[in-house]
Image 1 (cartoon, helix red, strand yellow):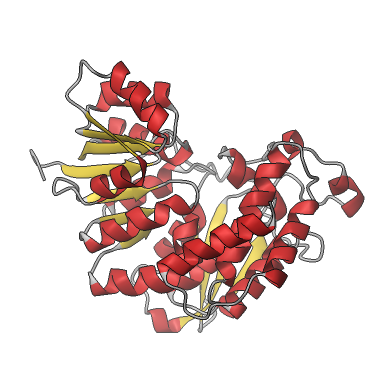
Image 2 (tube, rainbow, N blue to C red):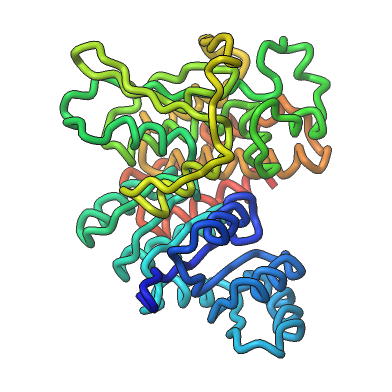
Length: 381
């Protein structure tokens, strides 16, 4: 800690979570930005470096790192690249907290490195727990490292558990907006294009997450995350459609009491809560008006049509490397859907084919997890 400020590394600083994290630091202070990372968005990274003056910047792409080095040669920032760069900024002595907001499985190794180095983790990377929860959670306990959820739903569950006995939980009620295709029929979905799926009614998110929201795969990934984060069985997690995205999730206790966290659909609140936990900082532009809020609706998800949810429950029930297969197959399918190469419903076919084809590994190591991802991608190539 330098000058009373905590040190911060942000993995994925040019993405949606990363940019909002920096906006919070800009408003609230409390942290010195020590290191930033991105995949290849050089121009935005340059802007962030000039404003926040980090000691380190990592571009995963070597070409992007070379470009960035030339652009910021007038500044004392150290520019690194690739996985080696990510691992270096995960373990810096000057860093207290790591915001893990990389998209994809490249976020797993740096998160493990940060945990081993004793850094507090503000977790926004789904793949870390979906594919390696059996490694991450025991390691975090061994190293006494807090993993604070940044996803709005998991933050809501975390907030609803404060001051309560974990053993008194009956079930977790994980809410979902239903996405842009809520209420659609199969014949409607058959002709949907990426542009249609990217029109989320409530949330502003990256393309991948928005497509996953449309297919309910995102909610399935969140079920797997919740299982690991809160040490519950997947069968004790119930998904509820809450179209207005006002109730972000709930916890039901064995006496019938239900604790819920409500708020406007804005990621700044869960990000800020993770950064400053257990303190609550002011966030004046983030308010519900209950006089204007006429109703809050609930629906049961259409699991027969939106198969992403059932695939996730099946993956966690089978365990081992199957959640990795589920995640990787979905990534391949979403990439192709965004390029217009396959239809929306084909996403489910890709996932099902992979989950039926890839060999089962009961207790996969990190290397076996990464090998499973590669094997899944090769299968669906």
